Amino acid sequence: MDQLSRYKKQAKLGEGTYGEVFRVQDTENNEILAMKKIQVENDEEGIPGTAIREISLLRELNHENVVKIRRVICQNRKVYIMFEHCEMDLRKFMNANDLSQKLVRELTKQVMAGTNYCHIHRVMHRDLKPQNVLLNISGGQPICKLADFGLARSFGVPIRHYTHEIVTLWYRSPEVLLGSKLYSTAVDVWSIGCIMAELSTGEPLFQGRSEVEMLFEIFQLRGTPTEDSWPGVSQLKDWRDTFPKLMGQSLQKRLRNSLSAQGFDLLEKLLEMDPGKRIPLSEAMSHKWFLE
Ligand code: AMP
Image (cartoon, rainbow, N blue to C red; front, top):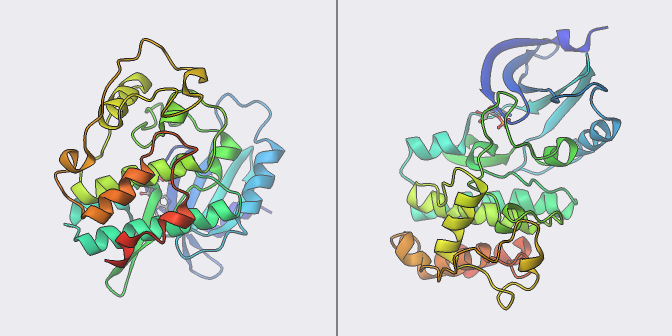
């Protein structure tokens, strides 16, 4: 029996990193879902069994701020993941609304809560960005739902979308850009720092078009790391001793004072260059900024 025939396609919602996303209706209960069709490039063997097992485990994640996976179907060497349907993503929400300080805090807190929950369940995202932060509006209040948690582990962090569009590097941490292979949950903390900055100004913090451009922009703001400030940095694969030695700027100045003093204190800690010193989310979530 064709398991997919139960889901009636209604519209294309978007094109993500791994494939197209459709709004579908479950004909057995009329529920509206989002279906992600995952294609793996250059893949002769089909989807690896490990990936399928890992995705199946993601169905166990259950948190208000994480998009729920309803069902996983493997058919014709493709994986179809049925997700809870969300109204919009954070990019669209930011474009349509002027965010108050209170809302910036609330959205940041929700993104942290969903991410922290996944980290506790040993799942990293590795590609957090506003396009992956989906939203529903409930009683006039936005509720963030993080999408694509765990997919990077199953399918790798691609360099290009399946449509060949380059995957954005704007939210990528310096250790990943420098070629570190030892990913830790700190990579998601960096991305959340970039998202928090963007929520407060409405503009992406870094906008490099290549790894080198990204590193240059990051060093310009946060200063070029040294062995003293970040032990081991010069051992990373893509480190070059010829990198310009930049001093860094003040976050307040760069973000035109768009946060309170406590907000900047938290942002400093999220955007710490050395992943070993970057604030863990459990600690970030109890920062004083959230009490203002
Ligand atoms: P993604 O692969 O998660 O980057 O998805 C690409 C686009 O598809 C997103 O920016 C959304 O606009 C849309 N999308 C993905 N998942 C959902 C969902 N669960 N509900 C509604 N729209 C979605």
